[in-house]
Image (cartoon, rainbow, N blue to C red; front, side, top):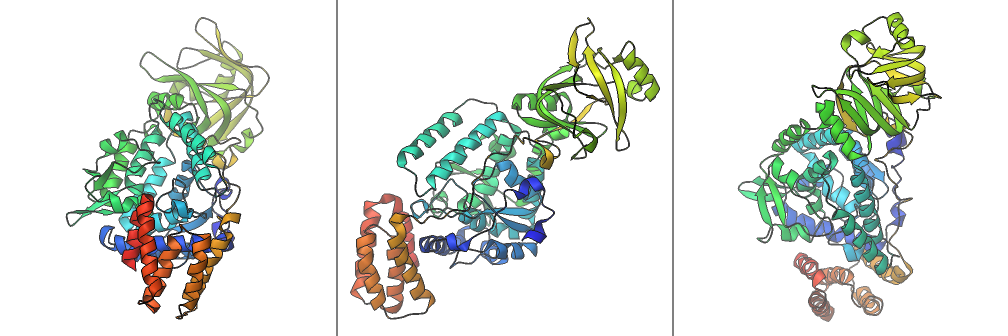
Length: 569
């Protein structure tokens, strides 16, 4: 895929990996096969009509875990792409891929014990869940618009904390070597953070919209709700139960979805039913009109300050300053007059960091004053004389002084004066900001037109607040304890793929399975399928059915999955 993805921004490329099919176990392949066979049977009646066609259109097979490269070639025909990624990437990164029309697909696959549902994104969720409905042009339009809007959302410090907790919990749950004690500790940690009372950020509100649409959405067709959300399409348990009476079906509305929080660790008590995908796109645009990146000004600065995380302030001349908005001042009319940013900072123009400012080491804080139009339109000579004299008057009634060093032009209207010994003085003579040791970039601007989340030039931002740690590599579910069982799964797989018909080999496999996997239901289901096909009157057919019924009764968490598998057989 390398040459095809040269255009992907550098800060996204670090999340792309190479899918290694040899890391998938025979148990993994059986998990995939079971999920797809059950899903195709169920969703052919209960999902969006394009579901089955979408599987074919996006390169998703039934019998084997899909090749992400094959999916990429298939998606390319409808204007999208696919990349293999490592584990649970930050939501902001996933959405940035989506805004580029790229489906980011996690290579890992859930463990057998988590077959019904896992909070950790895996290839079942990303491929079998997200990809099929992408075949619908109206749904693609919604996904693309959502990606563009969401990548501008302000992400709060709390959002990062909850992401870290979810990341840790999901990785532990899917780690075949992890102890139950550590998983319980991570679960408690997540619940503690999730229980905190906070005002939801733009990113959190958009996450709610995504959860109730792209993840757990239903669409009404011919008077009945049909599944299209990836979380449901990839969960053989919850999707089966969600259409029953115990789960509320609420007509979709922007207000309702934004008000409704969710818990990723439990089945959803309600779902939202949309009338059409264009309805979602219109609602998304309605919400985008309330966001800081479209409104700017004091409204945007207030949201950015509350977020306590990296944001980008955009001025009317196109200059962008990224950092944490720690404070700002307004005049009597309520307009912004002075903005203070802290943390790692960056000055950019049209999303590209200014090369001439790249070597300037800004201080721990930087204050940026705004000016009246007549001030910034003055000649360079007038500006420098005032800077060197009584000071250049700002919109807030302050004065800025400093020794002019040089002028930088960014685009047609963007101007920055580089000063030495700069200071901003209040109307009572107090020093509001001072930079004695570093060059100070004085941005000549009159207002803030936009404020959006993250840095402007994300690839070159030194410490991207919304980017968090990622999994080191694509992993395998094989353990010392599952080696013998995995070999039996492979022997059954070989039997099927080689077209064998004599069931004597299956009898020997079943005999060994009773020793190494007394409670394994999935391989018994596959054996039942093959016995029914090649020797339906065999005594082992009855034995397998009886054992599966016993496992269904003794392990209620498996009951629905066992029963649905038997129905297929």
